[in-house]
Amino acid sequence: MGLFKDYVSQTRKPEGTLGKMMLKGMNSGHAKMADWGLSHLTKIAPKEIAELGCGGGRNVGELLKKYSDANVTAIDYSPLSVEKATEYNKEEIEAGRCIVKEGDVSKLPLEEGKFDLATAFKTIYFWPGLEKCFGEVARILKPGGYFMIVN
Image 1 (cartoon, rainbow, N blue to C red):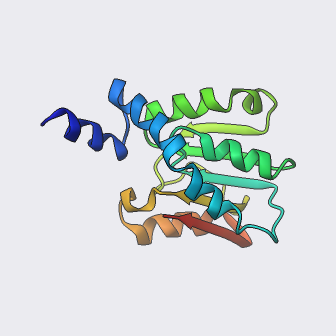
Image 2: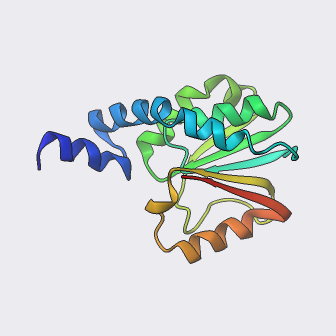
């Protein structure tokens, strides 16, 4: 596989040096679309948010800024993504407003009925079996909770 193909393959589960480059690129390259998506969340005030497929952590930080009274739990199945999202949101983690952990969306390591909002930015096409994954999202949402997908 050539270098370009090796780099592009990092979109699914970033690892190593190329994965670090990919995560940095995702944080900047997806920002405009992510911000557009977040701009549509005008009538809610979530207290508990799940960010699913958090990548490099930029959108976690934006959710924490937008909802200053909320806590965010960020999940990714890439250990490198967990590491980078943790670095990116270090201050909010230390303040107790954010948790970043490794997990698979097909079996979310999250409490049932806890979250007001779940978000997924440019990630659902990597999810294994959407019906099962969406069922997991429904399981963790409170009644009347929101699930926002931005692709």
